[in-house]
Image (tube, helix red, strand yellow):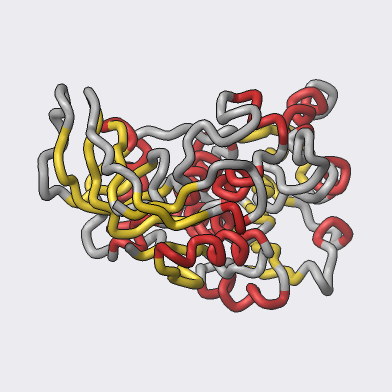
Length: 323
């Protein structure tokens, strides 16, 4: 089968299209014929091995432990391993795995769910990580409720585009923060107000928000707290700023410590993966409360270009690979 493989850490030019053996599902796994694979920021981190902190988390010190890139997937179950009871060959599924930039991939049974009805494979493939992360940020970490004022920073990106819609589905009044080129997207997703950060500074506007969801990862806690209500909640989703060692994750680590001396709740979100949240997400997707926003679709051979485009920060919503 064909797959996107890398032997060393580096930029997108280390990604190569190769023929490799088709995987065999082990106990508790399903073999999925990949129809589409989402491109998330984690792909870039695992490709470059940066921040270096992730190498200590078991992803490989000197080279990637898993050579095939890609983690979001949607496709058709080809076969199942021993002990699998939730799926059978022919089922359409979506979820997470290791190595989705390939024609076939093995996924753990508890990391996939039935593909939402009415969605294309491309639409389903961009949701398992980005939309689930947004769901956990809104529902769990932010505990957003009806009538609250919610600020989503990075409203035009992968997680942010889902966070705007999810917060709206929970009854919030949502303000999105994004660049000029993504303002119309944020509005189309249902944001009640949109702030173009190239023209206006939300931290100096004098408005306070009950919940701030920061999916952009490049503003100090002190700046974010200026726009947060005295008893408000800040949720930091990942980190894309900072040095090669921690990559900005120190904000997430330091946020709970600051909370000890403030009435504000400051949290760093580490998203988890399970079929339970995929099924909860499916309810929102099938109801039309949340709709995937796809900017560009790439072929498998063009994955290096897809990853590079996403990392440039210009993507309006999600980028997907169609296989």
